[in-house]
Image 1 (cartoon, rainbow, N blue to C red):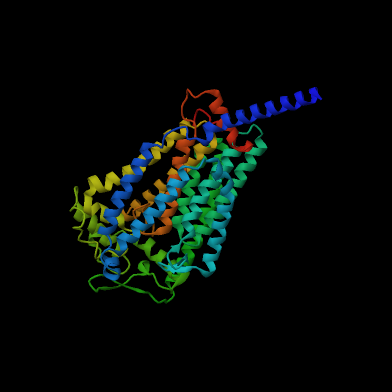
Image 2 (cartoon, rainbow, N blue to C red; image 1 turned 30 degrees about the vertical axis):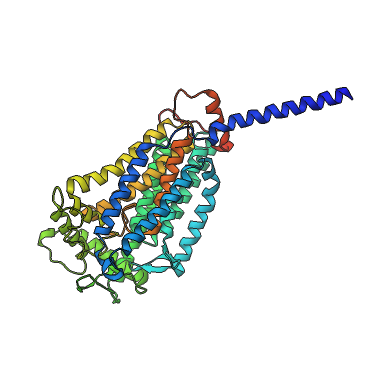
Length: 465
């Protein structure tokens, strides 16, 4: 009897010690190891403050229809929702993102398929799901899903010693890239190119062998070439067919026949294909811009150039924009032009660009200090998502890329874009808080962080990354 009690007592003591040990090891993981990254927070706060000012400055069209403060309050409302989402995600350990990745990816895929058949027509194409209080655009979630799924696949396979596992990982990564790109292709080439740029950047950071990287790039190039050829053919055929072009009325009562500004319920993919044909023809037009007249096909870009020219080096100050009431979609697809007109090329043009580039540089610095590969992929992928989207918007507005509707993250009007960007900021802040970045961290802390992840994601970050 005594022996039995002694054994039970010993077992209970061992269980207590083990439980205490587990709690002790888990504490450094559950509790943030680092404070929130001040650089990421600084970039976020600067962008949000500037976006409130510039969105209001660029909302003449919306003010004429909805009232003086309605567009501003709506934008601030979405920013507040995005802030709360970002704050919540930043307090969640990044290990939970792995479990949520595949469900989010397939929900995004199903949503895109739904939009293809039943979606709300915006700017001449089926792009959104009408939720009555907002239009949800799955294309934005597709790009976020691409970042998360690639981080999961590459982070769990590319550091394995078994080459079969590494090759299978690359095959699955390529499959998802092609699948998601094909879905985005239905809404235009620009979104597809953005997703391809994000995926190529993440694969480049994965320390792939040059031979494998070259094979994957060849596959992407063949797919991209075939897609571009199909798009060109569809655009040419659509341009030769008559179709109804919707009109846009500005705040001064001027009526424009602008396919790009369509927001109604007609046109569909045929109008989008015709629009792409006109945009490419306009982009490759050899006549200098200053010799071209303003017509329905080039109104947006010409007004955009006028806004940037009027802003000069130091701008006309927010609220004094001359072109905001004449530039269609100034509050979304062309807000960068209004930023330059208000704040000038030196502050608005270069300054805003540097904010996004600094975010990318800071994410890379955090990634280099991550002890595990998975969080390193997460933080760089999210930063690339935001920065590439911003650079494409800037290239389109300044004429370096053909005209296409792309929002400037957190600046442009649009609830879906703000929510997705906020999620990406939250993921980056989570990695910065919970991932070990101190080279002098104790072995217990490093071990606890590794054990917090699923076994297949326990790959140490190679020094060259």
